[in-house]
Length: 604
Image 1 (cartoon, helix red, strand yellow):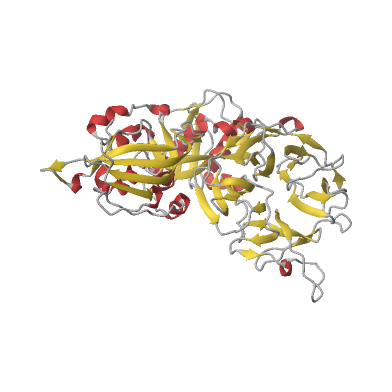
Image 2: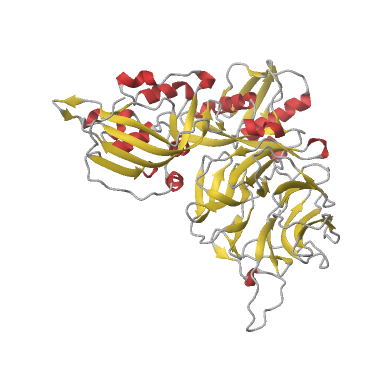
């Protein structure tokens, strides 16, 4: 190990993700700690990471490039990283091949650069381990536990004792793993969504992947097919089904000029299953136009137009334009915003009272689904559930004496005629409920910690949970008339102490928590990609609801709403929801302070 005998003459602390170009010979300067997510949100995309010499002798830029070098096609990851390592130290990084190649994705914190007496520089970087990016494009939970890495830098060339800046730098004493910064993940990879059929084969369920920007466009079809053949992400498996066992791709998917050919060795001659595979491929290829010719063991199926197949089989066939509602003086009322649809409350007046929070949804048969938290006796709360074709006039209530606390309930959306089911958290326990408000505990494979929030994705097969102050996602299995939750996967984020969560997109969550002060972030379903939405809240968010972006209905303006310190807000643009936005309330007499609207939500 090369370590100076004397303390270096210079220590420079920077936030590496901020990209501050501070040369080793400059005066000491400390940059304030910023947000890596903010930097990632504005960084431009590229296909290939910079070469070793691109940064010259700029320490910070060189290290940033070094932590991007693994980006790209997995089979050359070690080659690209070793190009940054001094020749005498290349053997410290042991190569792996094929599916064994995995990148340690880290979120960067502060970096300290210390100039040593031998003209080398010691680098110490604080990191947060996010996950392992596998060769199949999935981001698995992190394996490494290091909270910082340290290594050295030296000049690549000396001429008469003078450093030739054109030769660049080398890494000495490198980490023995492939590191990839979250900024590089955003810059050099395209996050994509592929789909697997739910366990009952009634709907398609999204699964997030990362495709290197360096992969040529013409190979995109081949990559997607390989992902589908390889099966779903580990955490999603309990709620979906993969392709039949031993399915293999025969040669590579080929095509061009709007026509693609995929040849699979797949067991079974079930034509319905083959047709479902074509639908799965059409949606997994995103908006790719053209025609698809699927072959099963060289037997061609009828050619399918990809766009027409997507049009004929909607991902979310029963999604509707969202309408905003909120609670005012214990009753649900519509919220009016210019340019947005505003409906009427689908509840009879006699049941629209004592409401604390609510969820209203539309079932497959266009029935209204109502689930509300209502006040009971002795400061206890109950779950009230009802359905109706145009209006809900009868509510069933959960039994017993009630609960000290109940979260906002959520419906698990279905695409068939089975009775609707939902999820709710009561006194720290997750429950499923039915249309008669009967509640059943749902076991979770988690450390013994109280559950405080639950949110359901638009597909009804994935949930997000907050338990013990940590954020999780999990797959849902609806087979057999019950609800089971697969092993939850914890998401590693910059936010601490999350308080509320909802689904903002197919592969993104909207989460309230803290980054030193209350904030709302958009976070990918694997925790890797973060975008700050609000960082100036000033008070903890205790209620959050979002309308999930989907391919069936256009996203409305202000796609999430929240409540903090007893005041409700709409986003995009940020706007307080005051009584003037509440429809159907009596004018407030002069001199009387009006109530604040609370617990806003979307009906869709």
